[in-house]
Image 1: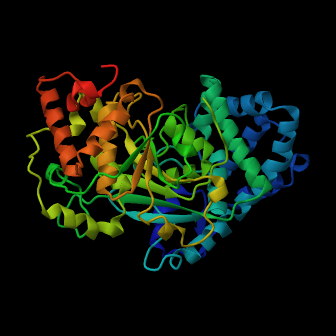
Image 2: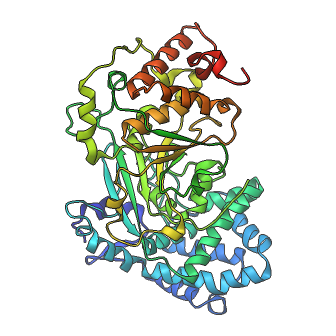
Image 3: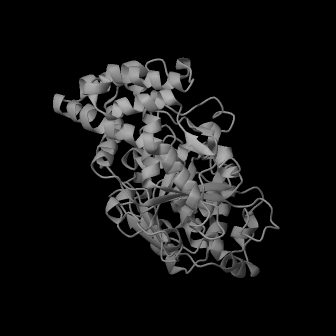
Length: 496
């Protein structure tokens, strides 16, 4: 074990220690977890207040400073488990769920050793072991759902060391801020986020899932001499003769409810999970709460750059709720098809991109556009059980389910972002896009625009050059129209 580079890279981020070629908890942690596993009659942990004391004891046994936790963490645990749960819910949580979580943590060293034992043979020639997937280094990690449950239990008990996470550009992984924010700045959304986590562990208590989840860092190489598809230039897009893919508009509904088996786009922060483990509660944060297995990726996936995306396959959904072109291309691209991408680019379009007219720069606010993470269809009823599921997800019949990327708090132009994602999906040879407009007013004419573009049989290069021309004229102050109004004759657009 001590010679495994993958383990050595992630070991400083784990609460375990390596002794005599084996992973293990310190003895005081083992004794404390054994006590918790026997239930509240033995451990005396029967309230949120006492639970946090047990968490503090575990952290002390791991030499983790109490000062590294958010100031109101103890108050948050007490508030949720002592005030927001009914007596029956609290009795089940402390009497049944906490003991199962403790047993899971006791098995954590064995689960991790077993993971490494099989990591080299699951996918021939591909390293799938748990490790730090560093920036600009493409790679994949394949974890069992049982191991993921143990990792998330570590987060719940705030057992992960955090000293070096900032230096490695890793986001917070423990749940201290999640609970502290509940107390410091109460909002119903925060309460419901924690309820999703609690429900996840209740499901784990009933039956631990037996599937696998893959986490892949995808990188478009900046080196244009790379044998793989590299980070595209403006000329790449301008000269493309790839046909536009089918574009279906969904004025209502939710991306995560689609049933077409499509890749589901998460309009992500550059840090995986965004504010999921603090006070955030928009699209990405909600997704991480209803699919808690996504949280495991926060442990080992540092922040994304403009030429990177993260693809996660197999994460199960446990709860319900109510309520820029290269980056998109990176997320939508299946690199094994790279030869198919090279062939169409050997012919050039008659149009040239205008100098300095990157369609991503329609206005200054778009430069803040969020990163793109990709989550394939994760309906729990269709959770993957076979070891070859990753290969199955590479087939060309997998489309894209997406929506208004970066058009909320980040102020992106929804019309431009719609077209950018259509371009990226088409160039990545995806067969279709399911676009969820969420009834946004700026997209009320999207159906007419789509029909008009398709009637002209445009290629990716044709539409890119129109978008580039618009961007150039907008930047020069020659038009103040939205892209749809600028593109189409006025009589095609209703209500304008």
